[in-house]
Length: 382
View 1 (tube, rainbow, N blue to C red):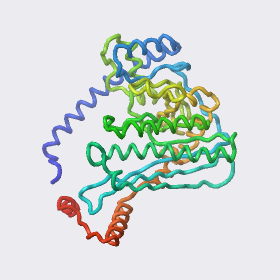
View 2 (cartoon, rainbow, N blue to C red):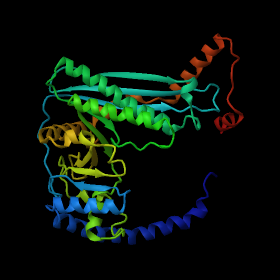
View 3 (cartoon, one colour):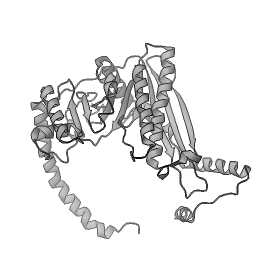
View 4 (cartoon, one colour):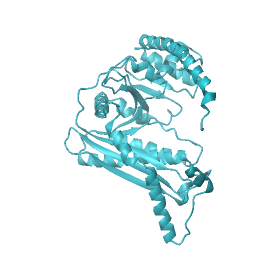
């Protein structure tokens, strides 16, 4: 028996009992937080100053910072999106496994291109990069899953740059939206590894190029768990480090405030990385209800400053995301991102086939066949 269900039974019962009490506490916090949101809805400059004062005391503060729209804004989406080209990218990876017969890694990038209201059929492309030899090792030893993920995310952005350049050569005036799954803010660790800085600089350079090309760049975070706006309200409620709204999330805060297709105000992202995303790259975000029913489907959309400051661009991005989510049926999520994931995903059989191909090449070069480690063989037998 893999799990001791008898021992867990009482703990599960206790969980259910505490959930009732906790829900009551959350509802009280939610009511107060919404009250503050309405009370300070138009206090943009005083709240900006409050955030800056808080950062001077707590450099690691992570919260929303008002931009220029009222905090209670709920902007409707245009009925239909205008003409544009949508480029959605996703990536997957294989991390080197020392217990497998051969040692290699893989970064796989899939892109789905959709011309919207332009005629023409969607298309797809894929880039596969094999990691081997020196690429598998860092100053700390074998490359980690996190560093492979860093390479993947950087390459996603670089591929986007190449494709946007091509689109702009074809039609310089055509709006091009680049959409990726997840935030634009980089979170990969360990940042102390000497490989992080050059890769991060490549990431920033790609954002700069997307800005120069005028691409409408966005990162889509489905079912966000952040409390960025809630944290802003805590700065109003408490002048110290207390967290009066612990347990609240922005998703809870806005779920009943946004009608289908509506977005919140745009906020600037205050975080420890703010000093590296400067100028046109300064990170902003808004929440968007992509549902078309009474059941909210809230996403956080991260955008750089060059997108945040243009109202027409925001309207186009909002309408495209809502339209894309509606295309996906009962589970609202941008259709183009779903397709990009399908293109990029590396399945178990792909890993097996790639391992076999590399083994055959090594045998052809005169190397003896390798075997899985005893540990891996034992796991596979379970």
